[in-house]
Length: 100
Image 1: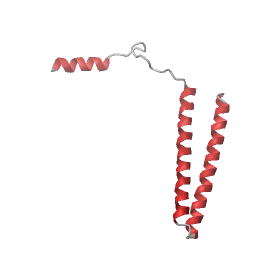
Image 2: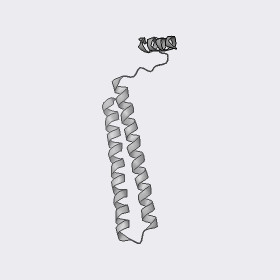
Image 3: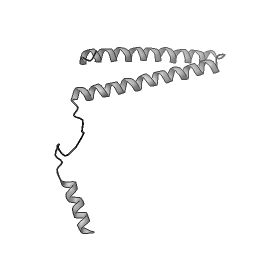
Image 4: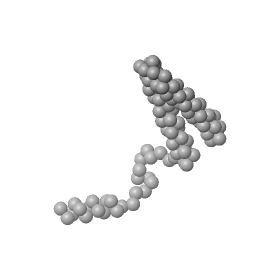
């Protein structure tokens, strides 16, 4: 048992050479930033579309209540504004990073 623990401790302490790892992608800082921003834009866009769907549900199910209709319209307006801002930010970052 002690031999097993000693081997485990030695293997955990061993240094890993970059040649030992196969198929490890080498990403630059620009690529990491680009990928992170694309994920952020996707998540924000998906949340905005989901908010529009929920607002549409509010609008359809309780269309007789003026307060709910106003709330649904505001959610739709702000969600569309958010989508426009995300599209503009995406275009700007693509232009600045040279991928556009």
